[in-house]
Amino acid sequence: MSPFAREMAGRSGWLVDHILVEKGSWDFPSGEAFAAFCGATFVEWNRKVPEADRPAFIADVLDHYRAAACHGPGEENVFKFQQMEVALTRPTD
Image 1 (cartoon, rainbow, N blue to C red):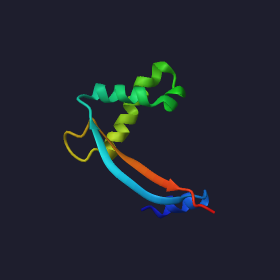
Image 2: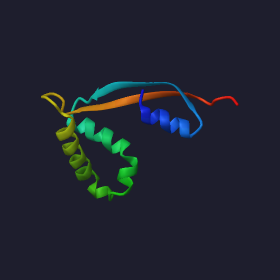
Image 3: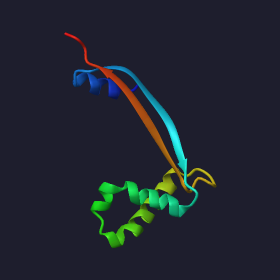
Image 4: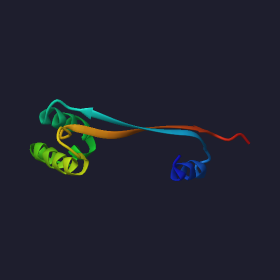
């Protein structure tokens, strides 16, 4: 369990019952499908980018992502992530 999460919850008056972190991945069938996913989920980022520049922006983000996250052939269109579940309770006085 993350000491940081436990400390943050404690400062807010909560007790951590458990934290579960699971790794996941989505393997997109093509670069175009991965880019379409990014176009639909980069809502906040895309607001700051003119619409005409968004495809180039997404391509640049994916180039940087692939350089950091792809560790072998066939991973070019795999989005890797972690899903966290946290259960908290408020202590009774």
